[in-house]
Image (tube, rainbow, N blue to C red; front, top):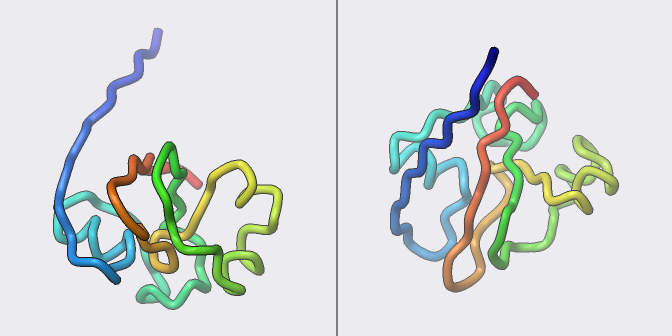
Length: 93
């Protein structure tokens, strides 16, 4: 039998920082083999709530519009616009 466990980590970041940098600041581990250039797709996250920047051309190329419409983003490309956001780390993607 398997069970699910949720770990929640919260941090404040300066405006203009992408989610990958925010994750590093809060000690949340995200894969990123392309050094945040939006090429590898390993820093995949899912937006649960919040206002983020529009998807970049790199995100559309790597993820496709269907995944983006489902709330998936590349942490290295997405920034929180205002307020707060809830982001789910996607493991095994």
